[in-house]
Amino acid sequence: MVMTTLFNHPDWQPAFNDFLTEADLLFRNSFKSNSAFDSVLKSKINYPVDISETDKGLLFEIAVVGLEKKDISVKTEGSILRVSYTKPEEEEKPIYVHKGISRRSFDLSFKISARYDLKKIEAQMSKGLLSLEVPFSSEAEPKEVKIN
Image (cartoon, rainbow, N blue to C red; front, side, top):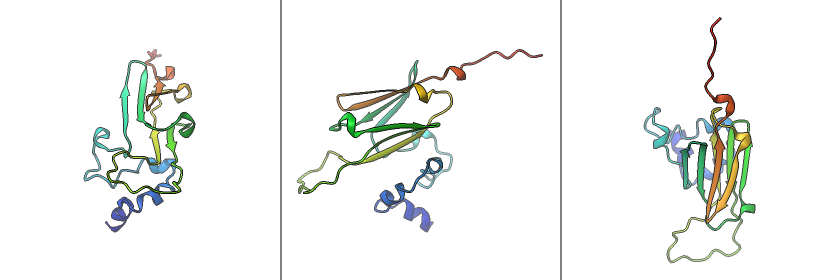
């Protein structure tokens, strides 16, 4: 109980995120839920992301307001899709009267099913929205198997 509380404490979370590996992605949210069997739709990603399936494949829409293309890193490794941005350190931090815009670093990682082809991913950025399209894999199409 102490370890789960420590790992989920907001002040400690950024320090632990630096040590996560791809294997950790499978277990990243396991302590944030009351049930080990919660649906993926109920899990909360800590950054504004919409993920949907279209007739062409998988579509990720990530809010990147105020960022430029050169600031964002999109990488694939095996079945992992990683999108990240590291906020530069501010020399002088302003004193806010109200702070409603979240300007923060992010490191989003997604394990993508073999049903989709990460080698053919396409990225576009328009009006503060990063769109990543991952098409269906031709190898994942249904095939009829002849019985001998």
